[in-house]
Image (cartoon, rainbow over all chains, first blue to last red; front, side):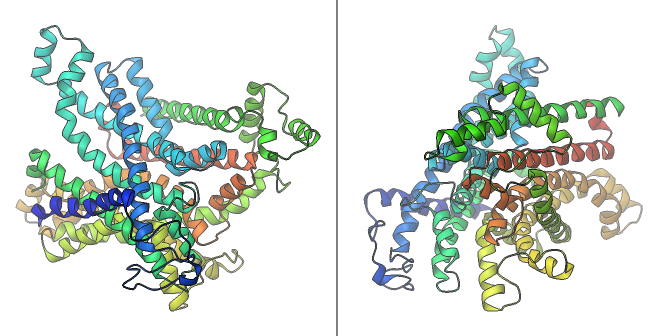
Length: 272
Length: 314
């Protein structure tokens, strides 16, 4: 059961990554081609997932939607790591000083804004779009990684091998880069997977309320928003994009759990 | 405790102050001329000038900020540009939808998650545990707005047990609660999944402690030891997560209110954006941040009251 978590998760998430990559060069139908005559068809051999209110092929749109969901989430996690990890390392290296205090208060500040509220504020100023969705989700990821990194780094600073590095004359920044970072890499990868899945959910939510990628770019959340008014008429239009989100997020979460067990044997021991 | 309280209060005030500055800068300074922004591209210059005077935009930013916060502290949030009524009044009306919805969802989530989590921990490794772990893994992956749509398809359209949206007002409390039920369920499910898992792992952790072995050795049954000793300690991490969930529920409510066409703060803020009513957006944002920060603060206090060691450790 436990052993299956990682492969199963990787398989689920992998299917959608592959679908996204394939959609770059090929989709079963053109996602921008409208065929109103064929609108709201149920699943068939020609259209596996059926068609939407404008006659577009839902399978093709789910594939192309994977592209925007996955890229927004990946870049948002990247933003969180690129800013959060150095901040956390810095806070831990200068623990107890005003630098540490400043980083922690910054975390409090960002956590005071629900992620969606940040997105709303950004949209109010700059208008909706995929880039702003990335910005909103990314900003929220920064304190997540800063806090995690600081906590893990603080406990590492107590260890003997870091004492040895200091005695050898290495400065705090060099120690952070050469000794602490490699030691917390596994932790960061696990958290990255979890934030990735949260990012997919957040992107879908933003797109659903119209703050994400704008039409005609297909996105899962946008498709669900369009499907909502048709739910009595053609429930399949809402079914497939929703399932795509659930399965991708489920896959990533399973991967995260599996990776944690695989990368950190200590946690596994404790949980038994 | 007094020292701890003072420190937490200072952090609360500091966070709120910084958040209000961020909101102010984002909405009133970065867009440049807020009056031109609110009126759009086709506005006549004299209309823009009139609005600028009405909003007091001819005054320096610092002055405007102080005026805003000073007014907000006295419950005066200014006038909505589109509705021409005080923003405080708008917020007051909408709060009667959003707050009950959030609390309803929180109550549902807790009522489902705690027994389920306790059951899974008590029957660890058994079929009940495996079912709970599988179901919660799925529950976390489901976007609440999609779940809401599926609930509407099943309970409103097919079975006709509930209405698909809208809110009848509190004149008939039962009808109001009924209208909030599907939205609350949609909000509660993902949170309940997280909470059940936290409850389970916290309880399992506590069941492994020495004091449980002692309790068993003095003759308590497994169930008695769990109820009297493990459960109480396991509830501390659960409390923290509950506090964090409040923030998620508020954010979730913004979306869910749009699914069910509920006249809450979430819909108000979206209408504010589409109508470019910065007065509304600014103040609702401030209120939501205030709510989240206040709850975090209260949870911190409850946590410190429950565990005295936290008062000294930072």
